[in-house]
Image (cartoon, rainbow over all chains, first blue to last red; front, side, top):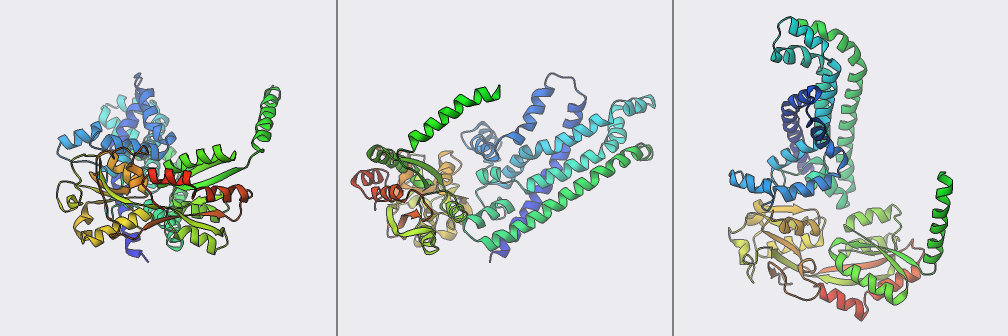
Length: 235
Length: 252
């Protein structure tokens, strides 16, 4: 049986999920901060745009990414002009597609957490002469850390379970774009049910463990939030 | 209020049901590569017999799993021979109705009118970056492409530039969208049904380079409309149907 191919797919999926989660946290945290505090008229359109992957079928998203990132699409023309080449069928292309696809799962929990922190701790910090950056880094972020952890876990798990988008733009290349979900799909399509069951079991156990962790985290969150101001005071 | 609104609709639904019950309705699972031809044949069949044909398009392997699980299909037009034979052996399909309805032809195709030459020598060149091929494990045309590359002793040489599509429809999509310059696809997919010239450029792969892509049809054993289903399967061998099959680039 294809143990080696399955293992390679597992390794690639983990690598993809780590890269995507790290980039999404770096990009999504300031974005969530802005969304939580802005009164701009662009807030609603941007929030709606970020939430689109929750509604759109992934294959639709994947199909339009294939068109946009292809040689006739404007993204494809831009990446070619920059000397990067075309993104479909590459690991980099998967990273970008996965970031779009998992964005709401990262931005929304962080935004909610920032909103829950409210203005008062920040105002209190301001009276103690904390600058905007200090208020963000030493007050808001520690208070919102439960949201950040939830966002990271959900973003990671959602990327691991991604299928439709990868199917459309991946090209099933071992070591570059063949992830667990597409490998599982191939097994099922080829009627290799034992191999499919084995991989599905891995995915199922992983997903359950992740969700269990998130749900364990959340009830305790109330206590965490209550003690958090102390923690924030002694960084 | 909801009720008073629902009643006329209910009556309308009943009327539609009684009307449809006059002729049989058959549910046909069709391999994606044969979709355009099947639509034409089904329309002619409906016109000639008064029965209704509902077509579902998809991958043969998926249809197999669905039929195993009791999906309400009456006929399967597969992309291969193995799947209908397997269903017949398992008693899920009627062996007596099993036959080859079409033999597919493999082509190397590009959307670029100047890229592919008449001998397929372009495969050995560096004028392209990506070759789109359907998964050999899943798609008979993918298997044929694999055999062709092996016969040309090009398997290892092109491997780094191959992108694998999950089915022959996606293999075409990769080429049409320009993401791959070349692709092994079915002649039936690129051949316009009016017999006009194929757009882009192509090499009709000689049929001695791969085992024939025979596509079999079978009636599903659980069907409740076996008469109409058998009539449809027989109709595939009629002159009317064969003219359509030929127009789409298949033989039989």
